Image 1 (spheres, rainbow, N blue to C red):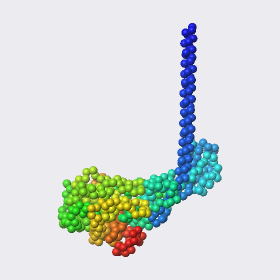
Image 2: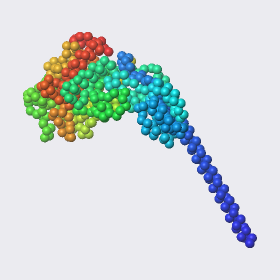
Image 3: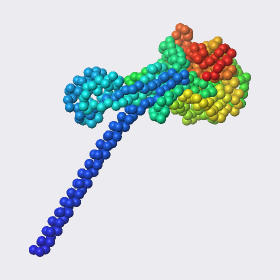
Image 4: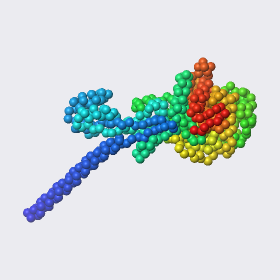
Length: 539
């Protein structure tokens, strides 16, 4: 009996200990749940406070180089609700719909019956609407102070400025690329000056758009930049979009062709091929290459468009845009020297501006002799229009690279060391480009307003692995005013169709060159170009 009593006493004690242990564990679990709940509420409140704080942050004003407002923020309000505090949902829906008729009653009912403790009703309200909401006196509604971004010029600077989302955060263009700077509250009263000029931007857009309509082109783009400061004075990409509208437009409309589009530019690259030939001292402008017969690359033949079928000098090969002559010049220079030279001109790396969008160049892994020949006349690798402008800024500025920018440079930009062995190459390039305007294939660029140097380029577009002869990318690049070029202008028209005015030709000399001439004539006064001797007041 005594042993049984001891045995049962031990069982009772173990049972008490187990129950006590279970109670302690349950208490810890309960306290843990309570702590987690308090943390969640605290985080939710902080998130809500953070949202309200972000909505009160003001984006800085963006101005063009002349001080015209390109983007600014207006006071606005955001309406939210706590559905759990709405006493009479049906009545609240009726009253809110009377103030916000653009939101359906069905949608309002869905939001006000949500199980969430915080839902948005309308993200942007005018001050007048805010007063009407307050007058309703509906418990559970909350108003936050916010901003509405406005772009006075709508489409004109759409690819430069970009846009913001409903939370007033940049989603494209300068708005995204410089989002932190634009939201800098320490300098919120200080405007940000861009390098672009509204007057020149308008001229570029108008002329490119008119050309696209006349020749039923798929798209067009243009860049005007200062060679010495690197400032981009105008940058247009068409089709474009209205930055004020938040609708999801077709991706082709939001593509910035200047920074995100990669293309084979054809004969434009003959400028670079000539610079390489002179850089490597493989000859002079009077060196002769036989262009009587096509140049063979394996089973393919390099031919000239309306070729002279005779020996030609390097100068003639440039003026008449001979693929054969330029291919043989590339052979003389050598593929390794060509690859190194193109690398110095930034062809193998992305050109980044203050925008969020940029594209990587498409460069073949194997830079063979055949690739070198085709690269000599602008085929076989794809780059952006920005690469063309940056490379010409280098070549025409005695080899000194000044990074391109969309922000106004209040101080003189510091140029990087020259990449050219002989700075005299710059002079030779603008001289022969002026010859191309006077006697070569860029004669439609010639104007009495100032002396201009130019080069046209017509490149067949690669479709499904084959080049289409009747689908061209037509480009024209000009430097002006010579003899001391200060500006470079590149215009590109995508897949135009010839008409009676061009005798149904759809090459760059007929399509892009006249656009360049018209633009130069219209902006020469803005740039301070005085007369046809090339005298000017530098911007």
